[in-house]
Image (cartoon, rainbow, N blue to C red; front, side, top):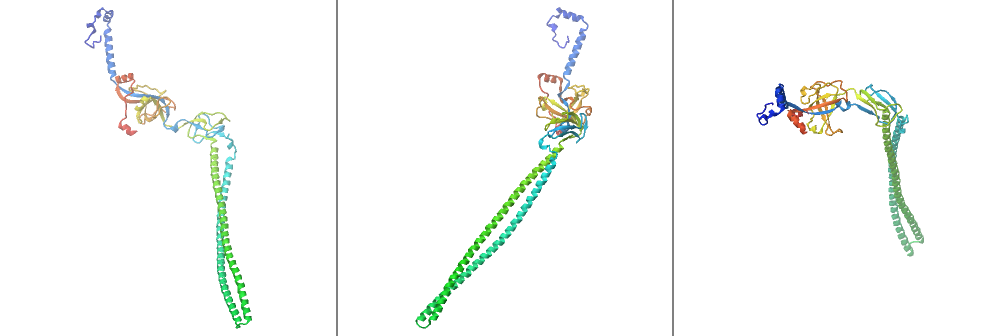
Length: 448
């Protein structure tokens, strides 16, 4: 018995009748066993109160810190046929080095002089634009000449109309004068006839006055004809003025219509020129796509297409390249229940597959072969494996990560949280509770 309580069982039960008691009392090592059990029990109780660092474990692989430093696949921007390889797997290539040459397979681009012919079409259309521009200028000059000629014709017709008005006025005055003379002639004739009847005038005088009267009557008819003719001249001059106005308005309208037609053709041709220039540039760029080059310095990992004469489509993966210069990082995954405990800028411990490591998750200070890391990013959307992705970079305040690490190597990570007694950690684990909710200090928040 361990004698750890006063309530001894031998006070209630007679154990002397049991054979096991006699055997144990005869065995001298019984007291040693009791002491060993007591020491173990004490150690176990003390052990339960030792500090234990809560942690979040995760698994992942080695990657690069920046996206453009990760292994990348080069694709073909156009469809074509493989004609020649310039590299093999494992070769080191510099940025701009030719990896592969492909030839054209689409019938729209098979013409070897396609770029040159398109350039000639562009020049021809540009010449057409210049011709239309010259035509527009010529029509503008023609419209100016028509306007000047119209102004001169109108001025001439207006002068003629003024002359006709003046002639009408003159003929009207002459007609009135002739009418006055006719009245005088009639008066004189009548007076002469009266005097001749009284015997005061001879018959010859009457005849002279009659002739004079007839002359005036004939003259007034002539003058009336001249007056009517001058009025007709006014009408004719007015009609001529209107005709000139209409004629030159039609000429100006036709020249303006021709000008607008030329402008429309010019703008249409300019649109065709821009379209041809776009095609010309596209053809030039397409010619440069026949040679597939390396986007950056790196090593050819794997040729995803092989053989000569093989046809590939647009966007087909051709070769995989690993950049030669990169900043190493670790991509790890944690359970959704642990995501609220992960904070950017917090430190974690990392160890790598194949690297000598001894890990005590509850006592990180006793671990060997682990390296320091800092959380630089975490995803807020769950990954396909049902966990959340966390990106870890090397901790500059601790020793450097091994240079021998290769991209894709397996890793294990451990984010350290609060220190709790071991008995609490055992109780939490048995009940399936998450680690204590952990928030970084204000100082760490400022660093974020």
